[in-house]
Amino acid sequence: MLPDLTTAQFVLLATLGVGVGTLGTMVGVGGGFLLVPVLLFLFPDAEPATIVSMSLTAVVLTGASATVGYRRQRLQDLRTGAIFIATALPASVLGALLTRAISRGAFDVIFGAVLVVGAVFIAWRGLRLAAAPERSRRGRERRIVDRSGRVFEYWVNEPLAASIAPVAGFFASFFGIGGGIAHVPVMILVLRIPSAVAVATSQLELMTASAAALAVHAAFTLDQPELWLRALIVGAGSASGAQIGVRLARLVGGRFVLRVIAAGLLLAGVRQLVSALT
Image 1 (spheres, helix red, strand yellow):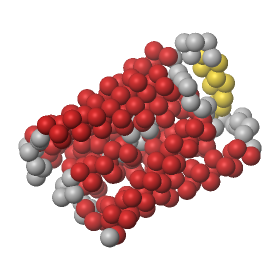
Image 2 (cartoon, rainbow, N blue to C red):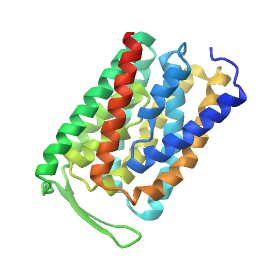
Image 3 (cartoon, rainbow, N blue to C red):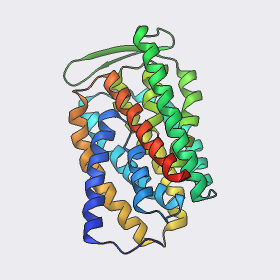
């Protein structure tokens, strides 16, 4: 059971939503990896499924808002997005179901550890690519021309994409952080998709897979209006912030995206582990 909503909490949740929506959309991750640690801090007695439900609501609304913006810019790789969606959806539903079976203590520790491991991998892989930045020519060729006339030509290893997406989808829905936090680094570091296209395309999977996971949680929590009120407040803020993030995304490059994700994961993970183990 959540406490009554105060005016201060309303303002805090809405502001939090705008912030994570802006940053999350700018780097293509939805903001869930920032939102979940804050929600765990604000609601120390809430069950993992409650925290995940609030976060996924924000992720879905952020993804929907960002998708509209990126479609206008013609930056999304629809074929790659469809592959990620089709293969990640079943795993996302499974992750949402398993969240309901884990204790808060175990959730906090595992969540923190996964964030730290993810940060280390992204930093390590990013350094390797900096030394060998050439793009792979394996797979199916893509050519995207955005609204401003920029041309992106690259190749996608579709079987590899289809094999990675379910793993990312499972962990994303299990922890309520949205698939972008896993898929954007995979697209840039493993599939070698240009960062601007990866950030925009991730919003398709982010919105769809997170919506499937959220539907699972909603089936068990429709009788908790206090939960959904808070979720919608954060979600409305994040949807607004997403439009800001879409505009700012044009100003950042792939290295900046990876650095922000790695730093955010590391800080959130260390903070989460310290809180859970002390």
